[in-house]
Amino acid sequence: MPLLMVGTLKKTSRKKINLNSQAMLDLQSVAQLIVAISVYFVWIFRYDNIIKEFKDFGLSDLTRTFVGAAKVAVSTLLIVGIWYPELVSISAIAMAFFMLAAQYFHFKVKNPFGKRVPSLIFLLLSIYIALASSGNLSI
Image (cartoon, rainbow, N blue to C red):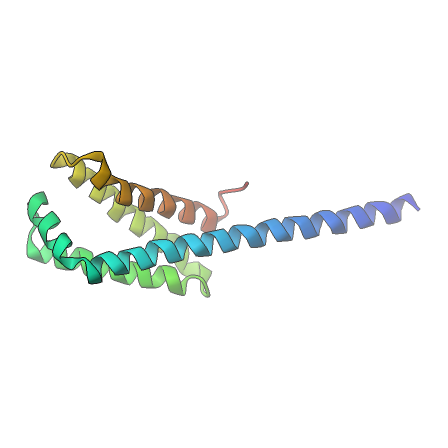
């Protein structure tokens, strides 16, 4: 009888682990969507603001075009990564790199903290996504 109870406990704990794993995947997917949709929004609907910021940063139109195309592509990969998880780690790392660069340029031109907050949040979310997708994050 004790062996049966141990087997039952193991099944219960496995279900709990699966539920936690599913919750982590759901949270990761939500984070991927938040980052990707936010990047789309900024680079499509607030493009006039992007033009101004890149001029303030002293970056060329070519650089702005490259960064925009790359961020939109990476955002697309983050969304596609919901169904193809092997795409997520590298996409999240690439997005984290772009957000780290944004932090650097905001700091360089001495923007107030309020202007740095969005890219800081997306940097942290991108790091979370990269860690969660690689299995190096456990809660």
